[in-house]
Image (tube, rainbow, N blue to C red; front, side):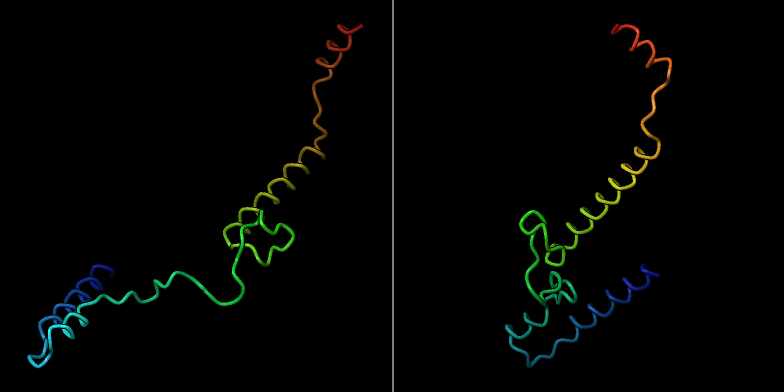
Length: 105
């Protein structure tokens, strides 16, 4: 499907380039050859500017989106890891504890 679209796009560009009118000046012809970038504008520029999370750590609504994702995933990871360690108790084998306890006395 994408190969077909690329072929159609090439044909349209070729047709646009070859169908130049003789009455066009060289400057207006050069303008018609400039590639238009479509949606490559660089992001959403509405609202207040976004900041790094370490610049304003108490306002997640002002953070850059990628920083919010990283901090959120790190927080969830720490929560799950802490819960795992808490509920498993970090238990060691009783034999190891007795050997360590006997050696210290």
